Length: 106
Length: 190
Image (cartoon, rainbow over all chains, first blue to last red; front, side, top):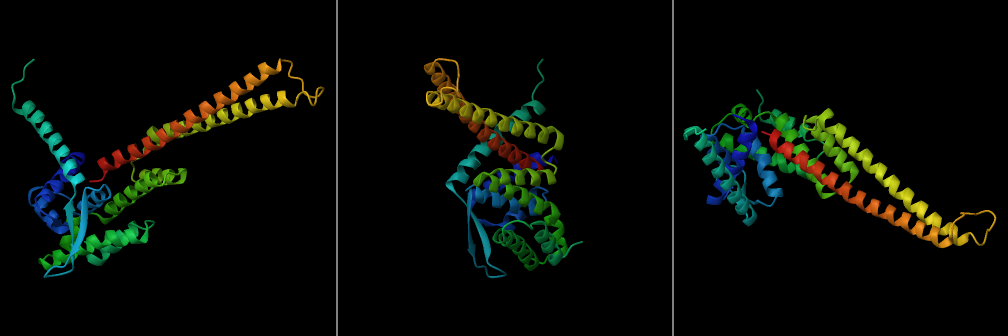
């Protein structure tokens, strides 16, 4: 799939998952790559950028197995950004579907 | 096929030049990823393959870091660094973008020179008029003192105005370049 397209969608998916609960990086990758084929390493630069932009905050939490995990939590700013992206996405898909499925009127 | 150590080392090498604490922070994420993947029964090679090319990932971090640096600490040096890093990624197209960019930088330098010359000329004109009575034979402007003083003030003000205008243009170019880099990197990094 087109890289630019995929990247925007990945941002939307990550933010969307984070509105449901806090996740650590591996979980996010796992959930998303169940549905979309992504290069998994690219999610970490994205999360880092989100943190710099103030969309997410992080905290470490011990786990039963393995090392402590870095959890990502969405911020107010992140929620706003998510709503904006979601709206763009919905407008976009509605538009595309109209072209694909709608009648062609000259 | 890379194993964990090879993957992390390639990534670390690619990140060279970034602040040490930033490198540690970035590597931590990937170490954690390997750690959890292994505890879920995956092999190191599988995880490395799913993560994708460490060289590309390092480049993405590097460009993004130099751009933030240029944004937070504006200086010609930092901007230049960001442009260079972007060029390494193939973002900052040499002819289409670097050419116009350099032309604009040249024009700004030219405008600054014009501004400074006008201010100097204006000040000299006023100063000359004031000291003319003291050296009646060596300085002879040949116009009425009030004319030459207002002329001087006019020149200096014009120079100052051009200088201020150029300063805002410089800021605009700086921000525009950063925006352009950011926009491009957003598109390029997969």
